[in-house]
Length: 453
Ligand code: NDP
Image 1: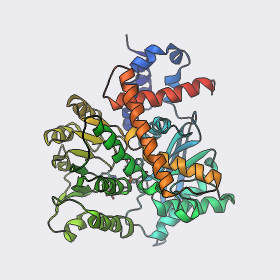
Image 2 (image 1 turned 60 degrees about the vertical axis):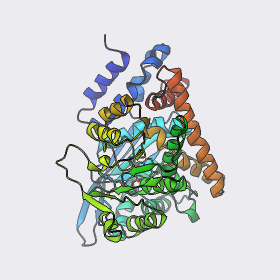
Image 3 (image 1 turned 45 degrees about the vertical axis):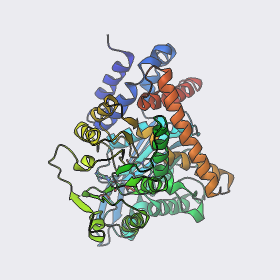
Image 4 (image 1 turned 135 degrees about the horizontal axis):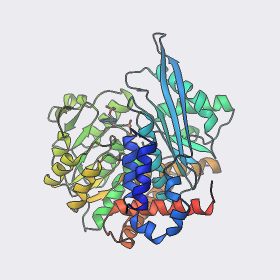
C-alpha cells in the first residue's frame, strides 16, 4: 500500500502538471518524513501534508515597461505566498529569463522550511519575474522595478510579506523597488530586506548567505576532526553568494580556485586571493561583466566555455576538497557528483537553492560525503534578513560584530539541529533528513496550533 507521503506526492504531480522543479522540491522533503508521520498520526488526520504543499496564495501579474529606445516590453511578475504559520511571508525576488511558476513555487516551498530552521519568526514566500537585468541600463532596470512594484505593493507589508533579493536582484534593484513602494504607500517601513546601509539596511546582509554557507562547512568538517585550513575549494557562480563564500574561505585559510557564470568558468591554480576577489567584485557588481574577463586579467588562469551538449559540467571535474555550488538549481547532476567524489571532494555545502539533482544527492550520500543541503547551509542569508527586520522594527542598527555574532550562532544552531534530528530519527549523518524533519516539525506544529486556516 502506498504511504501517506506517496499519496500526497502523486496528488501534487497530478494537480500541478509540468511543474518539475516544484515536484522535485516537494519530493525531497516528503521522502524524509516517513518516520515523523509514523510517530505523529495526528498530522494525517489534520491533512497537514495536503495543506503544506498548497501555497496559501499565488499572485501573477503583467509588468509593462519601456526600454531606452522607447519600445514597449512586457514581462510576467509573480509572488508565491506559501506558508505564514511562523510569521510574515519572507523570501527573495528573482529576476531571470528562466523564471516561471514552477521555479518560484519550489523556491517558496523550500523557503518555508529554511526559515523555520533559523528559529526566527518568518513564513515562506518567493517571487520574481522573467526579466533579465543583464545588458539593461540602470534607467531600464529602474523603470522595470517601478512597474513591478506598481502591482506588488498591494500584496506586501512589514507584517504581511517582506521580499528580499535573489538571482538578478541585488542592492540596486532593492533600492528602486523600495523607492517605488514608499512613493505608492507613503510608508517608510521594513518592507524589503537587503536595503542600503544608510536607509535601513543591516550590516552583514550582503555577506550573510556566503559566510553562513562556509560556516556550515566548518561545522560539518569539525564532526570529522577537519578544518578548512589549506582546503582546495571549487565555487560555482560569481554573484553575491559565491563572492562572499570566497571571502570567508580566504579568512579561514582555504584556497578557492574557481568562479563561474552562465557562460563558463575560470580555474586559477594559484588560488583566488583577496585582490583577485576584489577584481571579481568590481567586475560583477559595478561593471556587470563576464567571468571570462578574469582570465584576461590573470593570464595564468584558465577559462573554459560551457558546452550545453555535454552530459556534465567540467567545472565539477576540477579537483577539490570542498565544493560550494552557489549559482542555480540543478547545476550538479549524478555525473558531476561522481566526478567530484572521484576528484577527492569530501564536503559539499549548497549556497544555491537545490543545486544538486536528487541522483546527485544520492551519489554524495552513498560516498559518505559531508553534504549540507541548501535549506540549512544557505539559511544565513534569510536569517540576516530576519535580523534586518528586527532592527527595522526597533528603529535602530546593530554593529557589525553584533550581527556577525548572531549569524554565527544561528548557523551553529542550524547545524546542530540538523545533526541531532537526523540522529533522533534514525539516519545519523544525513543533514538532508535532519533539515527536512526539523523544518517540517516546526511548521506542522504551528499549523496544528492555529486550526484549519
Ligand atoms: P546573483 O544574481 O548575485 O548571482 C548568480 C550567479 O549564478 C551568477 O554568477 C550567475 O551567472 C549564475 N547563474 C545564474 N543562473 C545561472 C544558470 N542558469 N546557469 C549558470 N549560472 C547561472 O545571485 P545570488 O548569488 O544571490 O544567488 C545564487 C544562488 O544562491 C541562487 O540559487 C539563490 O536562490 C541562492 N541564495 C541566495 C541568497 C542571497 O541572499 N542572495 C540566500 C540563499 C540562497 P550570470 O551572471 O551569467 O547569470
